Length: 89
Image (cartoon, rainbow, N blue to C red; front, side, top):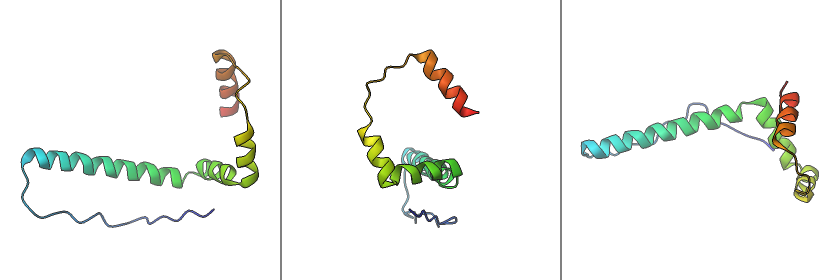
């Protein structure tokens, strides 16, 4: 799997027609949300741990193993939290 990014993509063209202040505020909010989503996506794409995880789950062998996992194992919250803390180090 190969991920390609365009670091400095130009922003989409904006309509030059006059808009009301409420519409302008909404447009600005949407534009800010889109910019934040783009920044988050770029951060994820340049994160090595995220890239490795994507490579693992897109591998056919790993995907098959994940699909056949069953939720029969019930783990209490304290055990899960302890296991997560051990793996985060």
